[in-house]
Length: 181
Image 1 (spheres, helix red, strand yellow):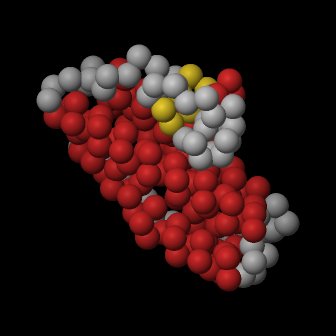
Image 2 (cartoon, one colour):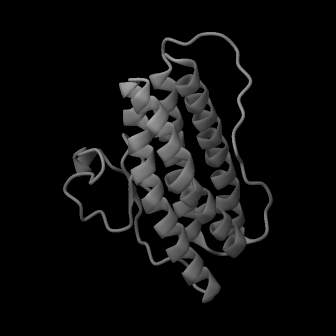
């Protein structure tokens, strides 16, 4: 694997890992504030970020050794509405700035596994941003997110509030494989 793609994958792995932990934390905050469905959305999205981290890690399967990893990460807890706003902003950064530039480098360097992992992530992050903004709108109106069930594709990180898809619109996995939250 070429150095620049490796560094980008390591950074993406670090960022997705941190998002995983941050969303679990913010889910606990939402639960304590009485937003049980928002808490489940944070939990499902945390799992989606773990999926992305695993895809990036797998793309680096031939790498060994210890490396310092620089990645962007939001910090703080300012209540569920602000946490949702921060989460949406982080997702937006990933699909508008981070992953597009990482993909260009990986394509130039012929790193097909890295490109595939990042393309799954970029499409899932678009969905995550929309769901976080929808949840924020509900919270700002004093309501919980309207979601009886939340479904996650465990292969690419796609999330659905309806489960009406027959197949994952990102990776094509059958909906029978979706994980329910």
